[in-house]
Length: 324
Image: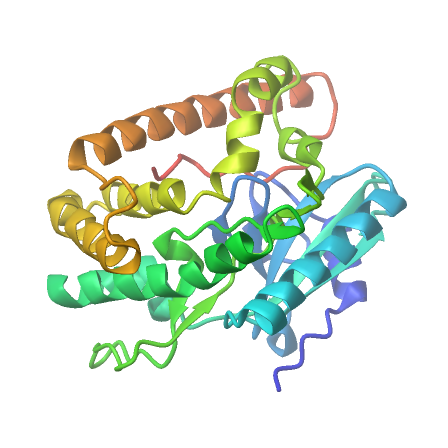
């Protein structure tokens, strides 16, 4: 069993000396492993912690609010793992009050994965036919969640972001990359624990807006928040997002074949009840999504510059550019 006991002393010291613009230059240097919309994944500190990836979420306002999030995160992971049967990478959420800023910060400690096992890296090593199999394996695992939702509609439902970069291929050897039969996958994107009880979303949607520039919050709330909070409960919509990620990963030429593989999966699953995806639809979705997130990052950088110019802290770690 992997030891995921987060080193709170290390995390508090790291937070106190963090340089959000250059995490690698912090008092305790950190390596960025990945960027999310609401979190940044880091490798922090000493050799004894190198097996842990830390997802940093600095947007909580009170200890109580962080505790509610932690309890929801634990419930979400437990439901995915124990009731639905998804293989979820071991993780654990911890929180503390940053002594320097007074901000409440949550870190999700997660078993660090071999980089080449992560879906968007793994697919680059595989032939197209194996990529098609990988996509269908992702859909088959994801179907466990959406089948659960259908069976428990109105009682308990979970949202799931199924893009290829949220899965790891268990046992993949980069020196001789081939997919096992059956393909074994592990899911690790648990920092947005979307869960509905009695039809009511348990994840506070305002958390998604905390990192947004104040001058954009109203328009994001008006135009995008409902879509963000509902799309991950819709199997077809997340399948479109899954295929669109192949544009992000610079594999445009694979999109027609992957779209075909997705349609074949759904045709076998529901006999054609679901409307087939089209390359045109996926391409349009990707262009809109990429444009939105490029603009969003640009505005966040403006917000950071304004805050720093006014002598205010900017706690978020931003990528140099959006890879979308």
